[in-house]
Length: 308
Ligand code: CP
Ligand code: NVA
Image 1 (cartoon, rainbow, N blue to C red):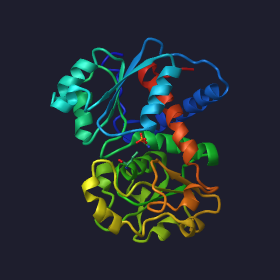
Image 2 (spheres, rainbow, N blue to C red):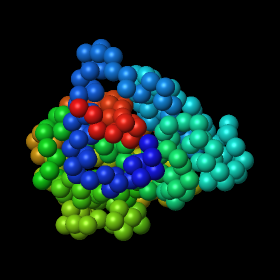
Image 3 (tube, rainbow, N blue to C red):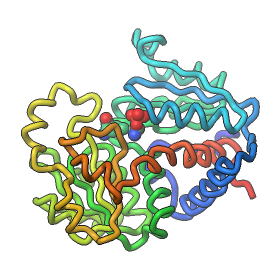
Image 4 (cartoon, rainbow, N blue to C red):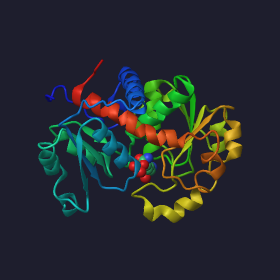
């Protein structure tokens, strides 16, 4: 695509509500085709480069399988096996890689690094997780909510735990898609609304107690106590987060038909009780699978625009 038409997906607020409506409907169509074993290969001869500076299971498998299903191919790079780990400037890496592939996905540390890559890339760039945001995950989570419960507009989502990349991205989604985010974090691990950059401050409600945040929620969600890159804080976090475990009592305060989500990987007995993540309200396996379906719609949108 020409530069003027080129879009990146670096954070959730890069797209408008109307673009999400399109992408979520495309996801539904693409997922249905997959379930019906219908071949759909609009990306023949297109290549996706995936750059991982942090570990991954879901992100790698979902992008890689999704790209092959659509007829394309992938190149997988990590810090350790590329010149990225030997201090080649990110701008130079972007200039080189983007001359040879059609699309790039990056998982890295600072959002600024992802933005520097995008600024020097000839092709669209997708955020596969940074310290600040995880937009592909929240896109999958919203699709999963809609599949199970219909529109998320006007609903209440409870975030229990760290004010991290997932929390920031949920806040951007609440702002754009018109739902309310209840957030309860331990002191010192608060969400910073300036990172999300919200337009409607009313979409965020803060709670000291995690149980209070869950009251009346249509969806309860959490994440690891220690995100990738923060391992040195592990001991301090284990102490600070001890009361931020989503348990059966918290789920009972939510709506009777509330869903539970977790981006995974999960730690049973830490951020979530086994009875909750393995219980009837949990949709975590659909949530993981839907990463692939939403990202297929996203790659189609970035590479060939609107179809149908
Ligand atoms: N949820 C998620 O992004 O998982 P991975 O770290 O396994 O990619
Ligand atoms: N917040 C977690 C999400 C992992 C998918 C992390 O950044 O490690």
